[in-house]
Length: 188
Image 1 (tube, rainbow, N blue to C red):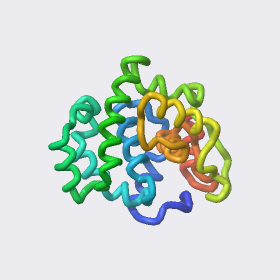
Image 2 (image 1 turned 120 degrees about the vertical axis):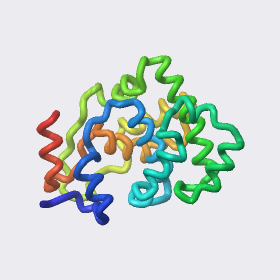
Image 3 (image 1 turned 60 degrees about the vertical axis):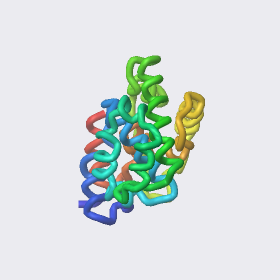
Image 4 (image 1 turned 30 degrees about the vertical axis):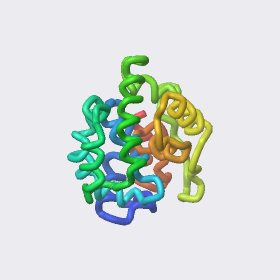
């Protein structure tokens, strides 16, 4: 069975086989993946996957309402947690992003309604043969980044937004020789 060539560890393989590129519309999961993509900046995705369960525990299962109320005491607790990336700017960004996320929900009804607008509500399917062909940013990720930054989100540059779009299935960027490419394409 052929997979995308970026999969190296059993955790990468499980993520590629079951989650990456599958259209996601659950607001809590969208928030989780946006936060994890931001945490990944400067690191490998494998590192974040290894810490994912710790993130879920540390950040109250990505309950944006609870995270939006975190204060200095909670920040210090998080900074002492070896199960997450202990970068003060990333921790503070998670709290700010929770607040901005809640604002978007108020404005649009759901974060899903807002975020999927960047692809017209429908996933895009690409046809990449190797990893070098996959862009690190697109016009859509540029637009998403700009809109999120305008609304007060942090750690949402275009490259992070592009990775987020791949993760939540806004784009199918599985390589065409990966068995998941055709499986996901059939669902669309």
